[in-house]
Length: 99
Ligand SMILES: [Zn+2]
Ligand SMILES: [Zn+2]
Image (cartoon, rainbow, N blue to C red; front, side):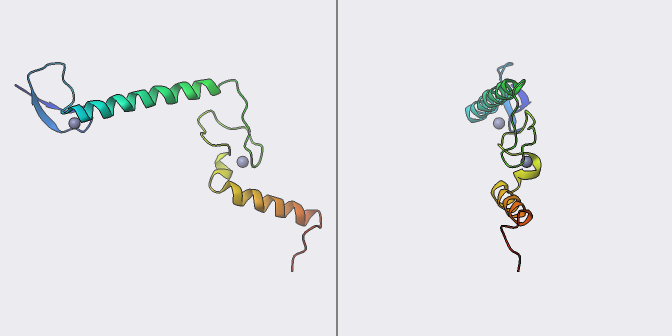
């Protein structure tokens, strides 16, 4: 028997199998799932290359790593910001009167 540390949860476990790197089948499954998700994410990001995506709130070009339809500046609260921008435009055009 050999003492090993699980590659996923870092729990110490004992095994006779030199190729076993996870303490349990749960850890092995989780790690496999994570790897698949990682691969999927990488491919998704690669697909964005050479594609121009613009922020739906302000029209700024989005990073390929951005998972949202809005840029970092608008991300926090896109709807609210869109509303504020509309109001600012309205004020500028004299359509909304401030009291
Ligand atoms: Zn584990
Ligand atoms: Zn934006």
